[in-house]
Length: 159
Image (tube, rainbow, N blue to C red; front, side):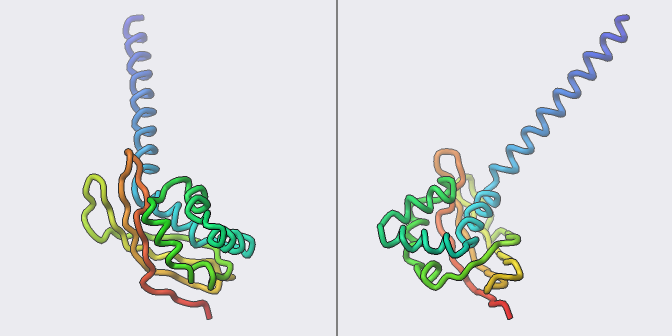
């Protein structure tokens, strides 16, 4: 009877330890700077005609920073939204596009609160753009990763 009890306790402890490990792994996965960058870049680059119009109106009404901060779930710094406004060709020359995938490769070794990556965003077949390559700088603020800046180095147009 005592052996059976010990086995049950051990099994319960192993299951609890496994659950904690999985939970910690999932938390780490979603707190990595690449995940935040992926979320923000997808929100920025995926647009339909209605979204393009909303962004133009937000720029005209001087509410673009608030609009994009909401669209990116607050995962952008003030510097980043100012950069988005400066890159108005991204919005005024915009055509509908849908991001299929984004791949990241580190540029520099990340410190505790700054990370930078080169990214390649691949778009769906019905988009005018086939691929965008650029870099993104992440900054940790109040314990959360936020996009501090991003820039496009090259754009490959669809045929």
